[in-house]
Length: 272
Image (tube, rainbow, N blue to C red; front, top):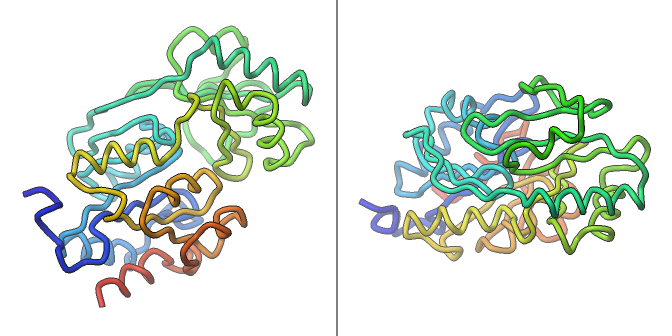
């Protein structure tokens, strides 16, 4: 039975959750309370979709640990992944010529950038260049020559700057290259260049359609500016208390932090 045939009494039949800073606590785990709340609302007939900036290779182990069998939107909306089947259903890649032009335009304004990039596919490597500060202990491959960026299809390019803040770098990148790529600020030290027009809302709408659900059925949880388009698409957007001010400004409500079971607080209320 499709999700559309279930959960008729629920206010929202699609629960869309970001991962980092939202579903995941600061230690990278999901609390028992949040797991129980998600299990209860899916048992009541709702569908849960993880919507993350992480590409599939950086998401898969987390979903497996959760016992997650459904669809996940990865790569900032560029990938729809079937976790139960370990199968990539759709993937949008970055035009590498446009990306190279965008990088050149940004560096003309900001000076040299530190670079990383995510290659496409279920097992796509993340390449990390000199000076780029990778967050956490995620697997990556050293990038020694910038020319190696362009040798295989990419989901995204990550940029950092030696002195500019994340917000300032994202704004400079949009001003310099917004006509060539989408610029997303996804977390501390995480400014990304994506295919033009791509957002989390793009991938979420595709995944929802596969479940015969719509934006009107959707409640979304997030913490960063890259979640703004998802909030704009969903019927109800819930920002974590630890969220960036830009997301809180467009949220319908603010819950507690990711370390205080903010998702569970809202889901328990919806379940009565």
